[in-house]
Image (cartoon, rainbow, N blue to C red):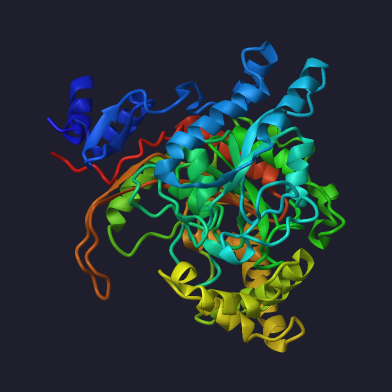
Length: 553
């Protein structure tokens, strides 16, 4: 009997009933948490229950780690060593971490000394985290956005504000994660999780599947239990998509809650950093540390008025009681009945938890909305990136020079896709251009005044909820408003025949999520709803690093 055959039949051994494939996946993930698949030198699939070092770290939470350090069972140094060993062994499959911090252990030692003296900075004291490789660190690590063009650039003069916030809170930044190069803003045909520097990051559930981007490495690393938590960045879906695809929690904050200074930019009207974790609790802990006013980022000018001092105070298991939520659904073009059958029980869970669901449809923003959104990003990317590169220093100080670099090194930078977005952005004017100003005004009005805020007021809603999808996260992202996705597990998706211009779709397994979003600065409410839902569903599934989808015997 082959290993895959054994795994596929394991639930039949464990249960008296014959489960479907989704039941198998959930049962095998829960029952075989420390088992992994790997291939030997001959390419044969092998089975090894001892392949993952320190299985006690699998699915552990930040509060649990703090309890172990408080009791003396763990130290920050030992915990850092454990996660570094997991990265060394497991990330050969996932390729989510670009480099580890050579100073990580000395940082952990210093934090252990503080703890011995009775000083504990926050719930992140001594906690190992990973951050995306577009976030500046003034240390011995690189900051490249995944591009070989910045590999030899000078080390940033200072930490990004968010990196400094984490350090101040006592987090141990143990490394940088891979990403879709330039945060997925180089080509219209880019491959999520691929960069010239880090090559391809792999989905931890099924290694041959898309990990989504651009915060691919952060989502994969958290899901694979290579760190306690991670930081991603988003312009439009770059936290939410890799979070849902890799089965973790992701929070995309209100633009301005978390400073962007020291983060390689795309768009000052949409960019933000945010936490990616395995639980809503850990995400709230991370967001508490990350938020803050920064004089270098004008978007944070009002942050002190709106930011909560401690987002964990909103972790209420009864938080859905009395909530009035707009139910936003974007069913797929195929398999609609199967899609509805899967999600309806989760909607019912929301209702049983005390929420009132009001079906809502967002207005059709028209065919020109997509063009407006892209234009705004291109204008801002050119201006914002040139400003960043000029202050960073190094050989390449403009977008124009980066385009030339990619052409001159196309065997390494352009082997899989081009740089159309780079070229089109370079052709844009400056930020006084009427085309830019009009497009920005239109998309903000559509997504804010005529979109999220209008629907909230007209229907007397507290927030919105629905299956995590690109249509939903794009509305929140373009508005600059907050959102959070919560994992639902693994969904068995049936095959679909060809339809219209759509080719036939094979059966697959997806990692769906439930998406909560609302108006500006509504993170406390969204965290409350997401946590209550998470406690009712417990959908997170531990990845098994399978080479591809299992098939039925």
